Image 1 (tube, one colour):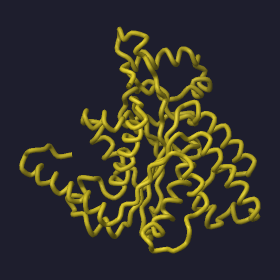
Image 2 (cartoon, helix red, strand yellow; image 1 turned 180 degrees about the vertical axis):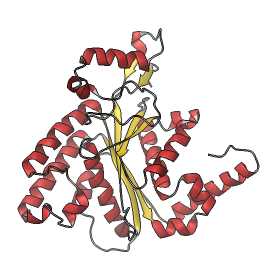
Image 3 (cartoon, rainbow, N blue to C red; image 1 turned 90 degrees about the vertical axis):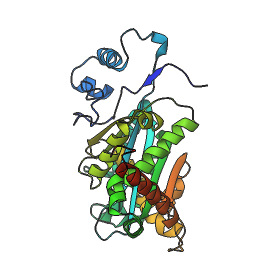
Image 4 (cartoon, helix red, strand yellow; image 1 turned 90 degrees about the horizontal axis):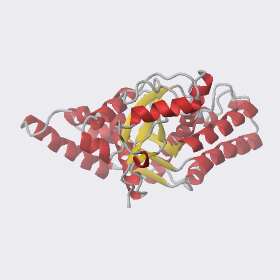
Length: 322
């Protein structure tokens, strides 16, 4: 049975020292997290009290003030023009685990001499500074990072599909409604997380964090806000907020980068276009509870048909335009 108390997320990303602000501005004065409050000279207890006062209506009984701290970090892969695949993926966890993750990840980066953070595509392609790593260093260091993810992420999610199939099957109107290929991918991720929370009987909402400057940021923001502003959709998808932060400061984004890259590399194999076995990092990350979607032409056609029906209903005045 679900706890009937009001469940609100009041703590957002773990690593940043300065907030760029929430897209949905649900809690505009919070800005930072528990670690940030110490950096900024704020008393942690006072910070939590302020957060609770903002999160709960006046008069809410203490027994109904159940706080669940859930944050999802999302990244994308396949954004270069020559890419035939789009992948969007990420991890969901609570504040305490993200704190542990960030401490362990930062320690690993220091040991590796990576002042700019870890970038999976550069690592895989032996771009500097990874070009001087020996094979043994590559195995050990990647394994260390993957274990940090496994030990701290509660759930992983992601989706990938072919760009050409999307362009072929979706009309211009359907593309506009879903926000484009990244909007479609993000919507699938929001749906997957919402279903997973429902399956786990968690009645909270999720703060989403994406990399600032991401190519698909505008599309993913549009889809998020269109659902956030519709109460039934917002509740069903467990949406709280969306914000954009720098990957070097918000370290879980680097973990999402690894998963997005691996799903990007896996799609040709899933579609039987590549006979090679799945890559080791993806097989390792599959040990975390996950919901990964690989949209083939049939699945994309279903989405396209649904959006075509919606566009017809909008034209008939039966639905408001998104």
